[in-house]
Length: 169
Ligand SMILES: CC(C)(COP(=O)(O)OP(=O)(O)OC[C@H]1O[C@@H](n2cnc3c(N)ncnc32)[C@H](O)[C@@H]1OP(=O)(O)O)[C@@H](O)C(=O)NCCC(=O)NCCS
Image (tube, rainbow, N blue to C red; front, side):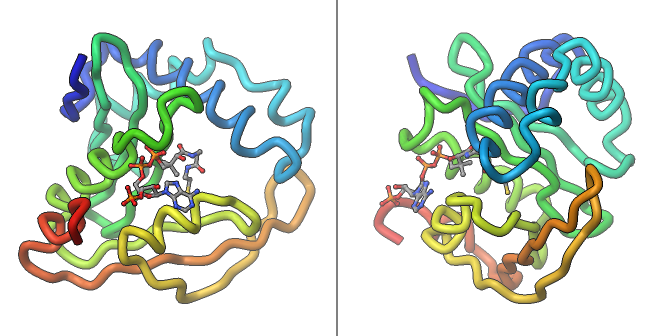
């Protein structure tokens, strides 16, 4: 079945929370403390994502899902900051173009310069480079009692940009 990217609805919150927890545990093993990953709660994440979907003006911005008869991935983008605030694809659905589809939809939505933060050591940096992003500002944030390094990836505002990100791009 094909995968469609669309704005999230409130009744997607539980499925988004499931993707969030599973993808975090897979992607951040060894990068974030194991007790943080073990402590992720689908119930709490469902509440958090329901709030985010209800309020697209809040910090995370507009939420999008990749729906192929089930939610395979999701992302969120804030027009206020021009940032992609989240982007996650289920481990078993990765490398099939879903991350690119979500990314391109959010770039269209933001309609201007785009940036996002990537945690040091996250292989997703390779994906953002493949999509034409350039590493820029570096920063550390304190979370869970540790200092986490991260890098901002940036894309300038170029009209027709998301079209140029297709496979032949
Ligand atoms: C990063 C992520 C969103 C990419 O999604 P995806 O659906 O696997 O990516 P796609 O299949 O759309 O890949 C698009 C292109 O990027 C390439 N690519 C994907 N992941 C890559 C990686 N880790 N390193 C280098 N290239 C990568 C693909 O091979 C593809 O290349 P192509 O143009 O030659 O076909 C996904 O791997 C993910 O959810 N990772 C875990 C969570 C995470 O780290 N999210 C980002 C937080 S900042």
